[in-house]
Length: 115
Length: 115
Image (tube, rainbow over all chains, first blue to last red; front, side):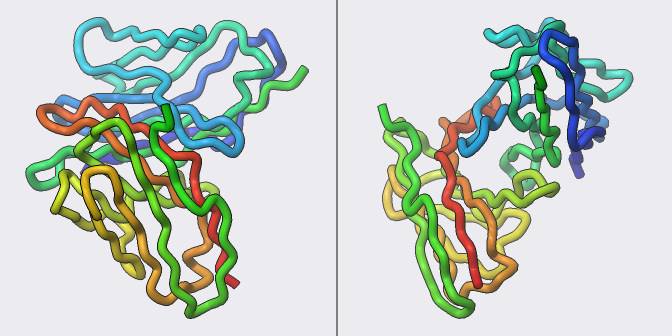
């Protein structure tokens, strides 16, 4: 079974500091990997995804994540965060169950950016 | 462009009462999902509907029923609410067929409290 581990439940940082949100997954087969973001009192939105090809993927707001197959990781990074990046971030992995594929979410990391 | 719309946004129930959460999407998506979100637990799949006319259980289906009314609408029913069902419920949808590339579109959530 697929599982997703987000190693930090909360990450406080100061504005303009770099941040890394860690995600590890368990799988011995090809996977698709995702990061979703949830701003306060909203639903989740897709931030970025890895399907194939280049192992470094980027979002439009400066986040990037690198697929590392040997370490089964997909950590999310940003070199300089803004107050507006305060949100909860979820790593997700596809899981094949029966004849269908479903997303399995990690438990989330709350990023708080302080002035 | 409404996307995924959930009603109601807030609801307070007494133990044993029943209620239905409504979800509608206007993106012509085939697949629809119901998740619950609890602090420190991430998102857990309750039920999903891969296409109109089909529904399947997710990780935590006990105490819930669903109806895929048509392609647009997917409702979640609590027949006899329990305090353990206090949670934030999210409906999501996606285009299905082929590989699950993972981009789910979420509603804004329905916050349910069971006293």
